Length: 183
Image (cartoon, rainbow, N blue to C red):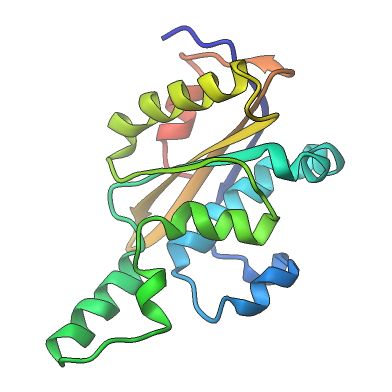
């Protein structure tokens, strides 16, 4: 696939890093699934080399999160609670697959478009890159974070390519396999 996007940063996350984020909006987040923190951490790590430009474009930065499993810890807790005929007002919103992109947006103050593809990364990454590239080419955004989340060793891990109109050209043979790999 030939895309015009450029890679502005790469990030990966092996552990959820809630303490890394100090957004005032996080005060209202009482619980988020570790997978959502992994996505947020991988996006933040990808943005590290250009913190000022990334922060300045917060209202023009979007997130595409891709993962077949979603927020598994929160979903399991909701499944268990439903069997006990109850629900958890804290875990319920965190059990939605949309929380993978939503928490990254809240934690980093991003206001651009978001998309969550609940697909295995090998099927979802080409679609996510295509959508991100289209938003960048049309000038909808300045940056697009395309992040994957998968289970490895019983815990979520993630990778993120931060795309922009400037930077090194996205290379299908290098960048797509890297994004599809597990850290």
